[in-house]
Image (cartoon, rainbow, N blue to C red; front, side, top):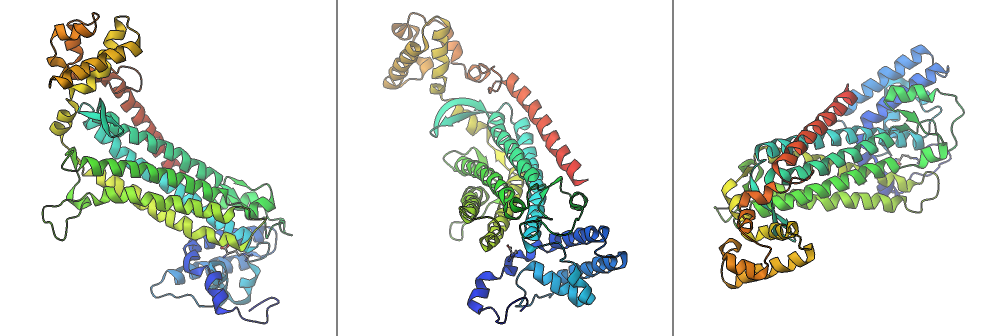
Length: 464
Ligand code: ARG
């Protein structure tokens, strides 16, 4: 024990207080940070060049020791920061005690966590890019495959499969923006805030920040020591992204059922049954569906921890790490699995075409035909409703109604009624920008290619 303490911590306190069981994951960031801090201390003369070199080399040996097989922390190590300081003391003796000059664990831990959030926001962007690339490739190769589009999971209007897949591409493109926001908000360095008031040493914070890859330094030491917004920003981005993947997973589960038969996953992303030999279950898609609430729970947990917490640091904030690490592991595994699952998925053109050949899907087309003849849309909606009922009651398709039967419902209808019921016309009539018709879809594919190239360039730029 150190400082004012005469008693050792009670084991029952130690069990909830000790963060090493999870914050060991900060080790590499903490060492990088300590090396940059030591350089800052040398610049203001707290360390001389020889001491800096010794601390720097000592920290490298600590890094190697921790990475070695069989390495174990001591039960008395409270957290990763204290453990590294102890190990550095083993390596270089009393000099290790100079490193904590002008620093508190409060600004130290905030800085470590900001570094984690930066690294994994970038990784999130990169992984979104990989799934977007798979979606884009599938959209390109299935740009003219008709399928039913659904509302309420009822067949609604036909679309091209490529158009449907690109809907997910754009969701992920927005996730990229959210991860980028988290990356930027974690790009402000808290180090120098000290415990809360700043420190008594005029370390050049901008140069330490540049050393560690931060864009800026915090303006206010109180905010610097207590801010965890960047972590919440990451968790919000990850939660929304996981929700998108869950919707996609859910559709794949439905589409791969025998009832739909729209697609089949590769065996390497499916499992069998221990009792039913015929089964090829879409487990990867089911898990994309089910992992999402876990990420959301991490977000809710941290909002709960930070809620109503007085400034500045409270030990409560130590509870920020487990939700963060779990969310990182979960969203990265899901994005990675999603890209892999898509690389081997196969769609059934005939099944999708047959399902989209249901003529009832053309009801809106007939209504619009009437509108072109001057009938107000609401009235046209009613006329087509009558035609649908006539067809259903007579056990016929819409195109099997005779011209006489059709004209009994509206004198505005003529032979063109049968033309709009031609299957391809329902898709190609959607010529509006953003619609499913071939022309706007080609433009959309082009925009998607540009967006993906920009995402890749952003990652490449940041990595170099
Ligand atoms: N393990 C602590 C955490 O994760 C480090 C900061 C401790 N600060 C303190 N004043 N006790 O939050």
